[in-house]
Image (cartoon, rainbow, N blue to C red; front, top):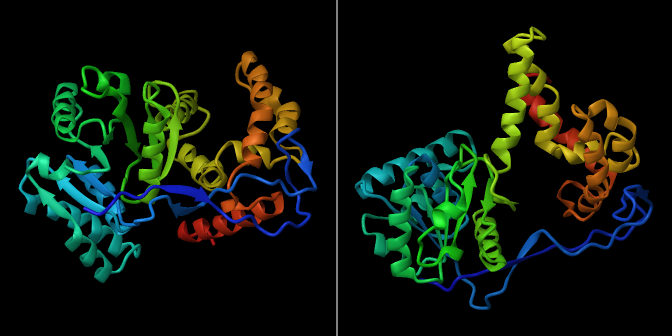
Length: 354
C-alpha cells in the first residue's frame, strides 16, 4: 500500500480590490476585503505522495456509493462483505451505471474505476493497513460492537472507524471498544454516491480523530460537517424533521394541500437553501447581514418568544463565520448574488421552468 496522504485546505486569496464583504467585526457591510485564513484547495503534507487506503465494511447501496466516491478520486479502495465478492462488485457496478446514465462519468472511466477496486470476504485483508474504515453494517449495536472489536484487534489504535449510522450515538458505538477514541459517526446523506454531505459526530473523540475524518472525507470529494453534540437526528435529520412537522401542520390545519406544501418548498426556499443554505440566505436579505436581519425581522420570524432572543445571541457569530468562509460562492454580496442566480437558472431549467 502506498503511504497515506493528508491535506491542508489552502486557497490563494483573490485580488485585493475594494469589493464589499460582510464584516466579521460588526455584521455590517465593509468596503475592505477581509484577509482570511487560506481555505479551499489541497496540499499534501506527505512528501511521498500517494493515495489513502479506504476500507468499506458492509456494502449495501450506502457503502458501495461511498466506495465509488473514493475510487473516483483515485483512492485505494477495498470493500468487505459477507456476500460473495462478485455480488458486491455487481452492486458497485450498478452505482457506476447510474452515474454514467446521469452523465456524471463516462463509461470508460466507470469501467476503469471498477477494475481498480478490490473486493474480499476476508476482514483482515480489507482493513490491514487502512487509513480510514467506513462501517456500513446493519443497524444492530451488537453487530457493530463485534465488528469494531475485530477491526481494532487487527489495526490497533492507528485507524479511524466511522459508522454510517443515522440513529446511534457515537458514545454507544464506542462503548467497550479497545480504542473508543477512534470510533465516530460519519453519516452520509442518501443517495450517498451523489450527495456530498457527511455528518461527523464524535464529541468523545480527540480533535485529532475528527481532523483525520475531515481530511479523509475531503479526499473522497465529500463536504463534511461536524455535529458537536449527541442530538437525535444529528444536524440534517433534525432540521428535516422540523420542516416535516411544519408541512404536516399546514395540511392538518387546512392551510394548504399536500401538493402545495411540496411546491412551496421546491420552488421557493428549497431552491434558495440548495445554493446558499439557510443562514447565508437570510443574511443576504438586508444590507447589514444577519445582525440587521435579526433586528428588523426577528419578531416576525420567531415562532416562540425565546427565539427572538436567540436571533440576537447568534447574530454576530453568524456574520463572523460567513465572512470567514472560503470564496467558493464569492466573497462579496454582489459575487454571491451572481453565483446564486446562475445556480437558480440551472436548477429551474432542470425543473422545466425556464
